[in-house]
Length: 133
Image (tube, rainbow, N blue to C red; front, top):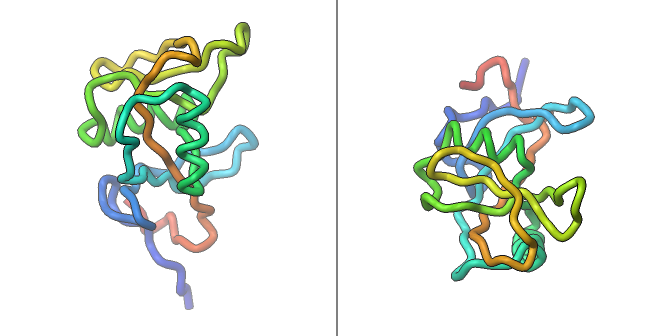
């Protein structure tokens, strides 16, 4: 008997947030991505945004996660740029951001103030992905 809980449809509540879909980490391990409802009261520098997300026991989304969030949950975001968790590879004073108006990703100086949202990554062991939407 399978006692695993099925995942909800994308956009439905899950684990204190909104289910955004299944994606994979850099090691190829799949996980369920959950967008938390919390938002900082004001725009934050990249470092402050990372600390804010950590305070929620969460992370800023990666660049691929941000693209998934734009594709599937764009309506949950202000039409502005939001920090990702990734520093720029060639200049560590910059970090990547996702623009939720048109889907562009770009780098911004880490001292700039931008919007932030946090995500949690849930292992699929407690879910039954074959029943998921």
